[in-house]
Length: 273
Image (cartoon, rainbow, N blue to C red; front, side, top):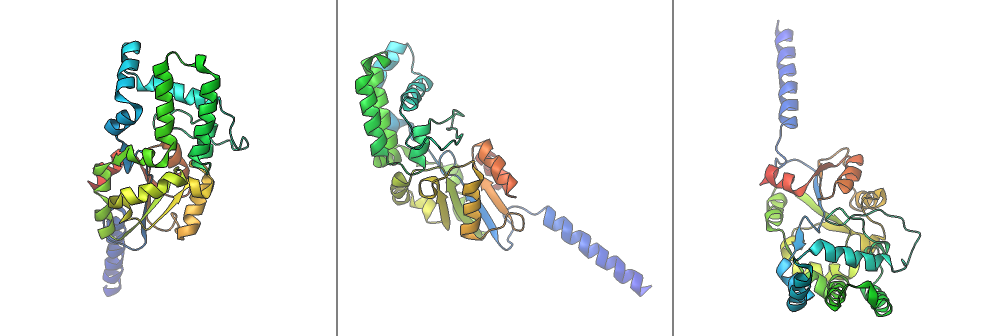
């Protein structure tokens, strides 16, 4: 009889343990918890007001008047068309990477994200624009493309046009308090990243490490950059709680293949916030 009671109690304990483990909050304390954040579109967003000033308010208004409305998508398309006309510095790289709007990034921009200096690309853009003035519908459109290139490929200007995504960044001290190892994995150029670290201590005061494409010479969603993250920080998503927060589904899909629990930042905010 005592043996049966002991067996029953042991079974009850095992069931309780499994139930508690599976229903635990992401913030429950346990060993070896890791969370990996993307930067752009997750921890940082575009500062629309600063970007407008960098583009030139007067020129933007004149362009909007010509177009009968302000269409940022049309300007971005023209900018990408210019970049597509420039010969990539390493045509062997065949990454398919999308921007925040789901549009494929031109090859020369992929070069920038994997180590090519922004100043080199700006020179190429300047040459193209000087030789192809008829490519633009108006001088205002040409001016905006030039200003956009200066904002994107000039490290200081680029970081000035970023701002904190406070609804996500405010979770960092909470995660740190709950003993998460906080890592970054981002498609980000190495030049502006140095400015990024200085401008946003609200992020980097809590970060334990990072992998960025400009230093690693490879990009998400390519599995190689995830493998480097795992090896560098000795993490095992199949054995530990490893979360991956990214706004792009292609990146989340690759992370999931390695065993990460993946979340869009909006979903993650609802769970933790």
